[in-house]
Image (tube, rainbow, N blue to C red; front, side):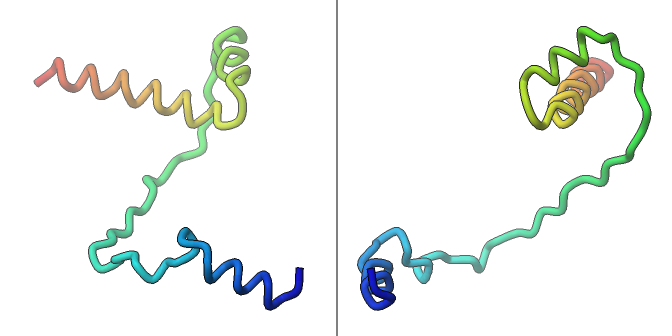
Amino acid sequence: MTEEEIEEGIRRDPDSDTTNFDWSKAVLVMPKRKEAISIRLDEDVLAFFKSLGAGYQTRINAVLRHFMEQVRAKQK
């Protein structure tokens, strides 16, 4: 394809038009700061989370967060 054909294809593609997005109400959400620590986990627990693929530390954090939120809710 020539450069002109590629550009024409982009112009005809309805999904390539980003001018219809309204960004006026967009909110910047900064990720929470994380602290690097050393933690000892049972081998099988760590192996399980690692077996789920990339992002296992994020999943461990999510499980701990859920536990924390449940405990806090019961304390109220």
